[in-house]
Amino acid sequence: MDEMNILMEQRMEKAQQMKEEGLELFQYKYDKQFAVADILKTFAEAAEEETGDVRTAGRLMIKRVHGKTGFADLKDDSGHIQLYFRRDVVGEEAYKIFKKLDIGDIIGVHGSIFRTHSGELTLFVKDFMLLTKSFRPLPEKFHGLQDKELRYRQRYVDMIVNDEVRERFRNRSRLISLIRRTMENAGYIEVETPVLVQMYGGADARPFTTHHNALSRDLYLRISLETYLKRLVVGGLEKVFEIGRVFRNEGLSKRHNPEFTLMEFYAAYHDLYDMMDFTRELILACVDGMGAEGRKVAYGDKTIDFNLPWKSVSMVEAIREYTGLDVLSMETDELRKKLKEFNPELDTKKMGQGKLIQEIFEATVEEHLVDPTFITDHPLEVSPLAKKKRGDETGLFVERFELFINGWEMANAFSELNDPMDQEARFRSQEANFEAGDEEAQRLDEDFIRALQYGLPPAGGVGIGVDRLVMLLTDAETIKDVIPFPLLKDEGK
Image 1: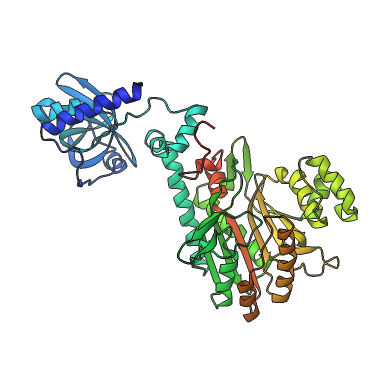
Image 2: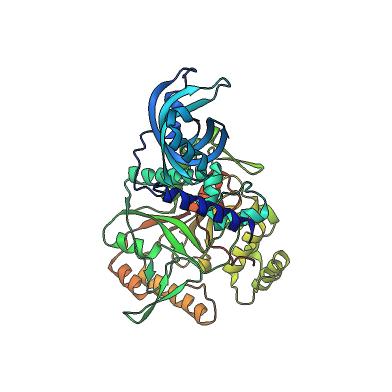
């Protein structure tokens, strides 16, 4: 029998004894009147004399018994506080129960506050109650590569042991609340759109497929929020946003999880440049709201400067700046050959000019874009839902930007294509690519075309990866650190 099983068996034997003595191991409720942080704040000036009357609850993290007295450390969601037990105060029977408590047990305590000779604020326990018995011992050490994988699999343990993990998830919640308030203050209304869809679209990604038994029909988990939000704009909701989960059947990496949180918002009578201005305002509201000093954010060994102005440059000009290449003057075969130099693993045979330009940009420019940078004028070939660029005689480019920060794509935006005939033609071109084996190509969505035929006002739209924004503003190394329960490979693989 391994050590964990031995320890669990010992705890279960102890629990059985406690039950036989009439002790309830799993209570229904407890009147917790103070969070630990509130106690520490309220009695910050307390002296050695006892003061106050407090009732709180939390998890027992440390316990030291010294004959007729004992100390323990109580931890709740807000902080830690030392507990002091005396046998002559809590009583003989209660003190026996205290001695039987295990690290990890959840207890409620009632007493007064005093400061020890060493200066530590302490709760002098007058009475207490076991609320939940813990059968599985907490790990003594919870770090290192092997344990990090375990932390993701057993996030509940990770959160018990590591305060900074709970703080990161609190900050995630704060950030999403900031986004929501900013959107509502700007006149956007929050909506919900389907997760199960008959036709996926709005992004180049492989979907997850499922089956509805009652309808005897295959359905997909959405890969984007775009086409349904645009339907709502057609229906007369002029400013809409959604913060929701999307699902893409792709690999795992530091910045990719198959299930992630996306925010998209659309505004009628706006174009790409309006959306660029508002995206800047939204990101700055998040940076300021999360307390970044001087609008500078430390991420790893970098310092990212969010102060205005933010750089804006076309994709073609960015490639020229970082590689010296004039991609518009190069033939398709030249582009293909050059891309192979940058990324030998790519299969370039079926790529057109626009796709090749995009891939060269990704291979040579993205990593250099540390401070916020808008990359504009993307190829039409890879932007089937965006309007063509005004004044572009080549017809190669659309009104689209991607915002890069720390070398990551953080936002993607268009002047939205509202010509149903142009949209249908692009869908059909993409459909041909799908039939030729491109699983990430857009499919023909006839109902979306029908919606456009009723009339989509001129509109701008933006999508922002919420998880990446949380990573950036909490200095998280991987996306797994900001998703409470990330998808992982099978154990041992």
